[in-house]
Amino acid sequence: MSSIWDKEIECCADHKKIEAIQLERLKHMVEKAYNNVPFYKKKLDEVGMTPDKVKSLDDLKHIPFTVKDDLRDNYPFGLFAEPMKNVSRIHASSGTTGKPVVAGYTKSDLENWTNAIARIVTAAGVTDEDIAQVSFGYGLFTGGFGLHYGLERVGATMVPMSSGNTQKQIMLMQDFGTTTLIATPSYAMYISEVIEEMELPKSNFRLKYGLFGAEGMSEEMRATLEKRFGALVTTNYGLTEVIGPGVSGECEYKCGQHINEDMFIVEIIDPNTGEVLPYGEKGEVVITTLTKEAMPMLRYRTRDISYLIPEPCSCGRTNYRLANIQGRTDDMLIIKGVNVFPSQIESVILGFPQVSPNYQLIVRRKNMMDNIEVVVELVDGSLLERFAELEQLERVIKERIHSVLGLDVKLRLAEPKSIERTTGKAKRVVDLREKS
Ligand SMILES: [Zn+2]
Image: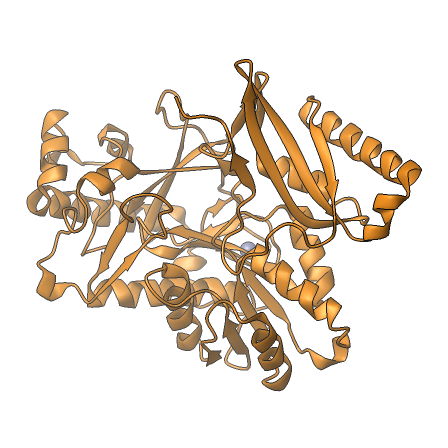
């Protein structure tokens, strides 16, 4: 069994002790936001929720939500609660359109971030014996630097490779004896494909752990990656708005992610009513930071969908777990009245060895109706000329998708390697619907 970085916090037998820390820090956080950020003062005044009214953790539900547009409206530094001279670093999201989401960190924020990651990578099995290759981009993106400092703190030998240059990634993995790879699941999959193409023997690699995050990963995708790398694959969670990676991470039991509860309060709400849901019920993840000084975040609506698991884990940790992200409210497609998540289709596709784990969902609108085309790559291109076999395969995949979604989809079996590969986050959904 792997060790535990901070036993006092992660294995606290009495959850009330953690809750007491949370309440004390929440009071401080609300006060700090109220006194230093005009946006929060206005919002809290509007509902009469002045800092002195926070008496219990239950009072959190009276605090208004913060949403992504609030960050955009206050771009770039409007939500900072510290003068710039106290802000040591700035990161930003890779926002595909318009202005990015900006996050600031004081020295103490960076120290807490490092510890948050140290706990997560320790839970994933990494120790000072490991050689960790970070294939996340270093830069404004929180993933690279975030993982780097936490891994360095536990004593791992760092290889700050950054993303891209796949041939070199593979060369270093072999030459340096990389034991831990940090990447997005889709980039990890791409690396494994290239390794296969190069026909490199498994004995050239010493990989033990894959820490794959920054985008969702279905259980089927995990199983495929574990098989290809012969390594334990875990995932972790976080977002730029509240810290970057570091909110939670899986241990070797892979049964939900241990939350850094002394740094974050995670709530699950009904995305339609905003009401807080009981443990075990699926809804939108809402995060409140408890230690962030440069940019406190009160009840941030992440749009990610998951649920909470309060039971202690077999690893010995008692902190509450967040189930792996099931999808995003933005990614949810409504096709003919049926809610569809790309991850559901991914689960089906990965069950077929004849097709690669690369896929795209193309959404179109015709006659006011949305429809979806699933494009998957064949592993063996010659199948495109064997019509009977091709039709047979197409039929069983469509049937399987129908049984999962209750929906007929258009399916296109494409040539091998015809879908663009990515070194960062994959683009799974291509939305061709005209925006009205
Ligand atoms: Zn555990």
